[in-house]
Amino acid sequence: MTFDVIINATPVGMGNTRDSPLNEDEINTRFLFDMVYDPEETRLMKLAKARGAELIPGIEMFVHQAARQFEIWTGKPAPRDEMLRVVQMSLHDRAAAREVSKAPRQK
Image 1 (cartoon, one colour):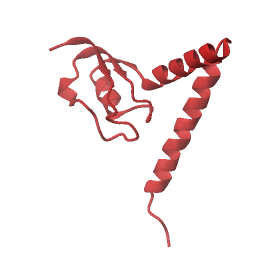
Image 2 (tube, rainbow, N blue to C red):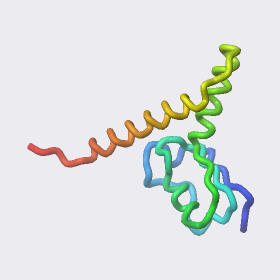
Image 3 (tube, helix red, strand yellow):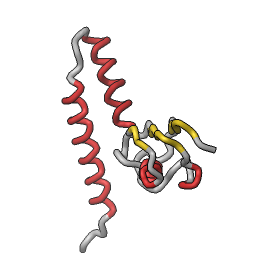
């Protein structure tokens, strides 16, 4: 089966790069939207990219939701670029902290 788009709306892959809700041979699509935003590139996204799919990362949804909420609550335009920058910095910091915690400890 071939699809126009596959949307991952599960938490599978959140916080790690090992898990994927689909196997590589199940990813037959033009577009893949993975709503998981941490890590920025999930295993599902890596598999889809290898199969030639165009990717829409979860960070897009995350920032757009936050921006819309900001606009509803404040009545002002959301600083989307700044919001995206802050989220990306935070995710990079979290990924770096995970790597440090995985490293063997020296005595």
